[in-house]
Length: 286
Image (cartoon, rainbow, N blue to C red; front, side, top):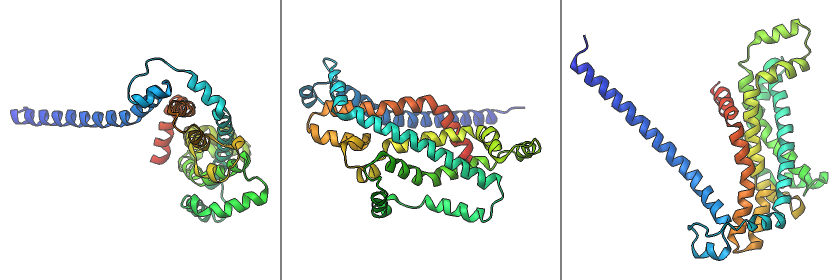
C-alpha cells in the first residue's frame, strides 16, 4: 500500500528532477547565447556603413550594405580563403590517412615495441608548438618550403598526427576481433582488411577526427603567422589580421571578412555534427 509519506517522497523527487532539468536547460541556453549573440552582432555590423557603425555599434542597420562583402573579397579575403581551403583539405587527408594507418598497426598488427611507439605518440601530444618555432623555421628554410602552403600543410599534419592517432586507436581497439579473423580466413590482405573492414567500421571516429582537424587548420594562427610572409600565401586568420591593419577603422568591412571566414566552418559543422558527436562519444568513451 502506498502511503502519504511515499507520495510526498515521490513528489519531492519529481520536483527535484524538474528543477535539475530547468537548471541544465538554463545553462545550455546561456552557453548558446554566448556563442550566437556575438555572431549575430558581427553579421549585423557587417551590413552597416562605417559612419552608422561608429555612431551606433549595437543598433540595427538602416539599410543592408552588401557592398562590404564585395570589397572585402576583392581586398584579399577570396585569396586567403582559397589558401585556407588548400591547406585544410590537404592536411585533413594526410593527417587522417597516416593516423588511421598508425592506429590500425597499433591495434590489429603484432609489431615490436608497440607500447613504446604508443608512448612516443602520446608524448608528441605534449610538445608545445612554441618551443619548436626556431628549429622548424630553419628546417623549412633549409628545405626551401618556407612561405609556402606545402610547409604549412606539413606542419599542420605533423603536429596533429599524435592526437588523431590516439583518438582513432581508442576506437579501433574495441572493434570485434572476430571480423579480422574471418577476413584473414577469406584471404584478405592487411591492406584489404584496412580499407574494406576496419576503416568503414571506424567511420564515426574518422569523421570526428576530420572535423577536429578541419577546425584546427582553418583557425590556426601561430604557424601561419610565423612561417608565411607574403600576401599570396596567407591563410584566413593571418589575412584577416592583415586586412584589419590596412582598413584601420573601417569596421563593417572587417566584420564582412570575418563573416565570410566563419560561414564555411558553420555550414560544415552543422552538416557533420551528428557524426561528430557520435564519434567523440564512442571514441573517447572507450
